[in-house]
Amino acid sequence: MGKFQLITKGLVKENPTFVLLLGMCPTLATTTSAINGMSMGLATLFVLVLSNMAISATAPYIPDKVRIPAYIVIIAAFVTILQLVMQAFTPDIYETLGLFIPLIVVNCIVLGRAEAFANKNSVVDSACDGLGIGLGFTLALTILGLVREILGSGSAFGFKFISGDGILVFVLAPGAFMALAYLIVLFKKVTAKKGE
Amino acid sequence: MEYILIIISAIFVNNILLSQFMGICPFLGVSNKLSTAAGMSGAVCFVITLATLVTYLFQYYVLVPLEIEYMQTIAFILIIAALVQMVEIVLKKISPSLYQALGIFLPLITTNCAVLGVALMVVTNEFSYGGSEPHLLNLGESVVFAFATSLGFGLAMILFAGLREQIALNKVPKPFKGIPIALVTASILAMAFMGFSGLV
Image 1 (cartoon, each protein chain N blue to C red):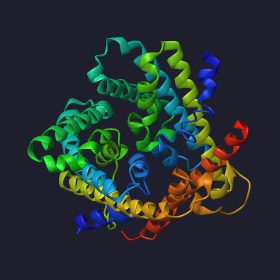
Image 2: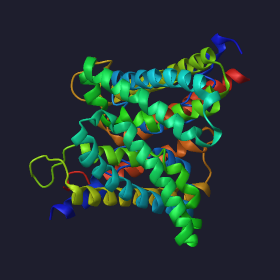
Image 3: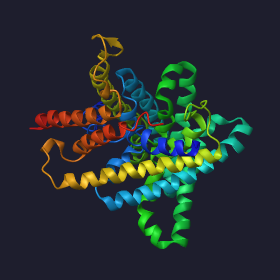
């Protein structure tokens, strides 16, 4: 598989949110607006690319029995770096996303890519894979955030286009489940048609 | 009094699954059958309470005195992973029947964000109950909070599994089969739980 395909497959065919249904906690919790969704996606992308590269480089030296704890430590190290960087440069976003930044450690997408791809492929391929899956995740979170923001508060990326409030429930918890359900169905429909 | 407020708030008002979105993976993954949902809830209950106790002590007796609070994430996830392993070994030795019921769920719990989430929440977030000043929880409150949160997890999980068992008997439109209909159900369940908001 070429490098380019490795990157693009994460966007549609193996989209982590709409197809593989991984990493649901941040997907539902941080998509109250398009900006928040995108920030969460990019934060995960950062960890995903670096941890994929590090795990791919160290995999031959890690004994098979302790590989999962070792991966978790590597991932946690990058998450800590991300936390410190975000606290320093983007304190507002860090404040909004809150607990879900440290919780990237237990995001199944990151550990899943380490186990399924990074530990048996080269560093460059792993970086491409991380980039692709990360971009797919970012795309999905941005779309979900955008839908919820438009319906829930009548704005897109912070620009308000109706006066007054939207359908408030879409910003709250039930709207997150509902919007994601319908987006998955829509995604299934569209990709199924393409396949025919 | 405050303990009662903590318990009600953690189970109903700020339900970990339906209003904070932590631990969604097992919520969607193992809620097909009531019995597995109950087993998972039991295991989570056990681990969350224990993990919060240990990480709380670790935070205030190791990380804070040494001024290395930034190691929190790494330290906590390692503690949780070690704890889960230990619980598995101990349970196997002293109570094989309980091990049989909870055993298969234990390895999954390390990467359940509810466990790490609650452990981090009690040492970083400030809580306010019944109009009191926002404050960090003390040890007793933290453990009660963790236990009540895991009860809330169990409650949502078991209700949801019951609903899904019923849905499995009905005809669902084809694109909605599987996860989408589960998400729609979860949405309605979350709406029901919104009725509790403002209670505490």
